Image: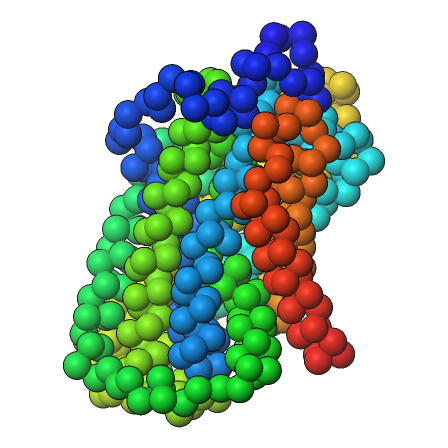
Length: 437
C-alpha cells in the first residue's frame, strides 16, 4: 500500500494480504518485547473479575462450565485478533482505533463508535479505583491492625500512584505491569494446587436437563467475556506492532494474541475449576449468597491462613494490572471524542496538552468514585456488557465485511463463529437486563 492510498483501498502489499499469503515471509522470531506485551495483555484481562469468576461461572454446575472452558479460547482469541487487525491495517502511524473508525466508516459512525468504546471502558476504570481502595483499606484494618485512614486520603494516594505509572513512558509502564503479573500467575497456580486434595467430582453425576444446560451456558457467556476482556489495550498494542513490524504487524500481533489467550485460559480456568471442585455445587451457592470474593470465602470456609494471606495480594495485583490497561483505553477513547468533536489540532492545541488535560480529568473522576464508594460493580458489569460485545465481536466483523483493506480476511469460518458468539453474549446480557428492570 503506497502512502497515497487510504485504508479503504486494497493492494497485494497490505498487512492483511501478507498475513493471509502462505508464501509470505516468515514472522520475525519471538523476542523479549513480545513476551512483555503478552504479559501486559494478560494483566489487562485479569482484574477484579477473577475474584468472582469461579462463583459466577461455577454456580450453574460443572457441565455448562465444561463447555464454556472449551469455547472460551476461540471466543477470546478470534475476537481480539479481529480488533487488532483493524488497527494493523492502517498505514497511518498516528492512527489508533478511534481514528480508524472514522477512516473506515465515516465521521458520523466513527464518532458513535468512539463514544461506545469509551463507555465500555471508563465505568470499569472507576470501579477499579473503588476496588483498590476497598482492598487496601481492608488489609490495613484487618491484617495489619491499623486505624483506617480517611477515605479521601487513602484513595487519593492509591489512584495517584496508579495514575503516575500511566504517565510514565510505555516501557516503564510495561515493566511495572510485568512485575505485578508474574506473582499473580504464581499465586493463582499455588492456590489451584493447594485446593487439589479437597477436590470432589460428585458434581459430574448431577446432569442438568438440556434446557437448563443451554440457559446456564448462555447466561454464563457475558461473565466469561468480561473476565477475559483485554480490548482496552489492543489498540495501543497494535499501534506498537505496526510501528515495529510494518507489513508483518498483523501476523506478529496474531502470534502474541494467541500466546496471551492461551495463558489466560490455562491459568484462569485451572483456578476456576480448582475452586469449583473444592467447594462443590452447594459451596459455590453459599459463596454467591455470602457476596464475598472467592478467596475470602475459601479462607473463611476452609480455615486456611495461606489463602487468607494470598487473597489481598491477588486482589491488589489483579486490580492494579488491569487498571493500567483500562486507563490506556479510557484515555484513548476520551482523546478520540475530543479530537473528533472539538477539532483541537485544527485550532492549534497540541496533542500533549489535550493528553495531559484528559489525564487530569480521568484522575479526578476515578478519585471521586473511590471516595463515594458505590456498590455497583455487578450493575456496571452488566450495563457495559452490551457495549463490550459490540466493540469486541460485532464491529470488527462489520469492518472486515465492509472495508477493502481487510478483504483478505473475509469468508472465514472463524468470522461466523465470532458473530454468533457476539450475538449470544449480547442477547444474554439483554436478557439479564430484562430481569433487573
